[in-house]
Length: 343
Image (cartoon, rainbow, N blue to C red; front, side, top):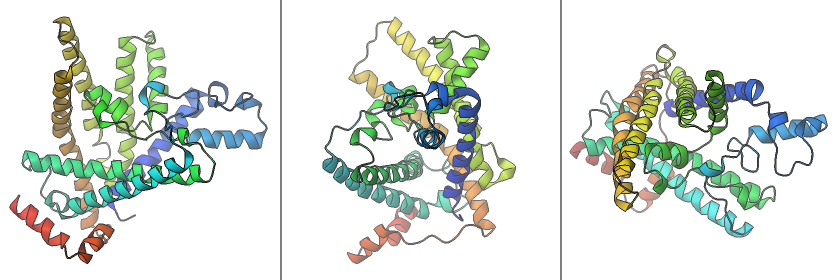
């Protein structure tokens, strides 16, 4: 595409489809094990045209909303709004998320850590956190923008009910432990095949289901698969360095196991859950990610910089936010250059 960030997402998405295909074909056996809430007969008994449509719908619903494989405890609650209210709310959120996306893109465009040999890791702590937030916000806002637009269009057309479109990301207040951040706050679009491969691994190892050992194995397998699918993005940036994402994802189970150990000790000595413990939890998650994310993002930016040096990356276009700001006499370019010059 000529855009390093989009190329990374494209490579990751292609490998995600391949890994999900392996899960569906070799592990899940969806025609026999999955059911939709409106199914009157098992999918394998449907005529071929209807069965084909059933498979297409199932593949486009990775979180399992309305399906038997839905992860009830890990999804935001379904909307109870009326159809008109839901569509209006979604369109307003599209505008808000697109504004956030452009703000993050502008910040990244003028940030030396994204455009020169400077690195995010070498920035002062506050600037490092800002750089990480800008990068993460691009994924968060882009996914939300597309999701809310699709929700508004399909609900307005009568194809779906509002309850079929729970938010793609959980609430930030849920992320007071690393496990909850990855399992509830961040999107759960890959959970279907994380669960499939994780359960297959526990069966292969002879570990009883619904135990701490089984949960631990599934956590490790989930992040291994995350590293694998993101290796597709690595390869799109620089095939000779494909796999640099594994380092970040393999650190996450270590952090989760460490916090579980601390929580167990805290319970043993009588410390109960309270607003203070949640505050400590938020601080822990923030500090952990502020340490783990910058080296990984530096590798992604380095790959995009190599593409730019080879003339693969096209020139950046002026965003709508910059155009609107220009109408009221605000020169965003001068403001951002001054910000980074004085940072």
